[in-house]
Image 1: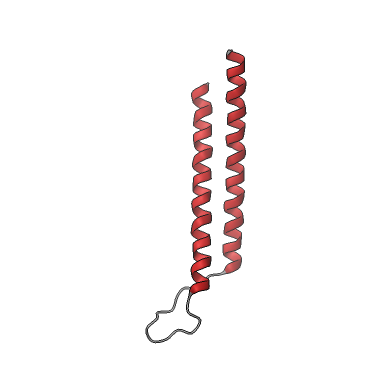
Image 2 (image 1 turned 90 degrees about the horizontal axis):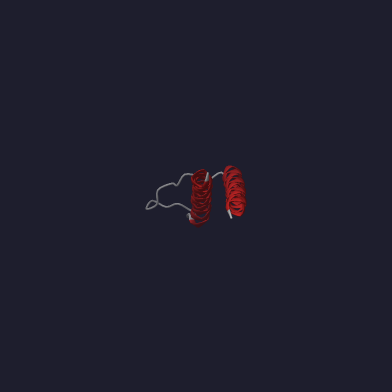
Amino acid sequence: ADKHIMDVMNAALGGMMIAQSSFDRTAQRIADSSTQSTQPNRFTQPQDSVDLSTEAVTLLAAKNQFQASAQVFQAGDKMQKKLLDIMA
């Protein structure tokens, strides 16, 4: 049973890492869009525009995914503690 709890906690940790990565990538796209030249010249190539509303939704989704994974991790931690109490 302890192995299954650890599997749940590892899956939750993986979800948290994926959410953090998504959040970081989105934040970087937003930051990069604000540093692009507003007046392109013949030496700069046009950059893809960033839709801030889409990026905001992506940030919120990553936040929600992280929070949900953190709750799963906490539940696994509580289950593991209960199991240890039962076995003691």
